[in-house]
Length: 306
Image (cartoon, rainbow, N blue to C red; front, side, top):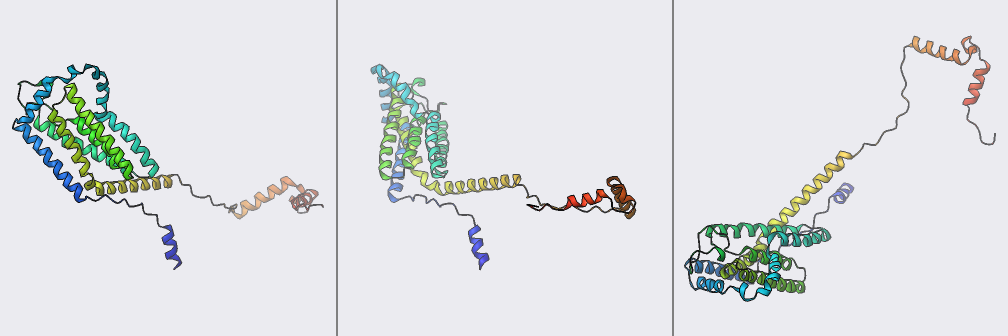
């Protein structure tokens, strides 16, 4: 009975289980609608529909020439959609949260979202190969399969995903509402800024918004994988700590008394006789002398007060 009790006490505490958010019907319906919108834009550009004509009208309007006073500000604002700076800023915030909450989930969610963003958006960019407005060759053309890489807009999709992660990881409904509004405003502004500067068509931005939203909506499906990855990392950390502690652990020194030295009888006798003769010549003659009496007296413990 006592063995079972101590075994339960010595057992390592299990890490807290993180419940993955379930895909509600509303989220599934929103994911399906966004996917349909995504495919509709791709088809509309491929068949050179009215959407391509709208792209050319906006491009020939040249917004950067209509409002040149905004150009300096928007050159800095568009950085909020660049993957490197935004990933560093958001990762610093989520890293602090991970340290405070003793969990790796915020950082793992960010890494998963950015990986999905690179794979999905990058594959479509390279596969469709659309040229940007500054490199267009024929008015009214969709400029598809020409070696470009701007469809969908990476700045827009990155802004939706990077800033939307903050709303996705919010712990209260109020914080989720505010952060959702903030991420929507930032991503909308980044997308329109790329159209103003002339680096993207309007349809590029529409597809970028849809691509980023699809990634955010699909993240709950990856939560079990994120939880297993976090548990695996913690297991590896504990094993490393145990090995480190085992490598520097010192065994306690066992105090041992003086060990007797076994000597041959002749050597032991001769050695003792020589030592006694050196201390007191009288001992060598076989009678006690004053030196031996003094030696014996000095070996007696001194009594206090005596």
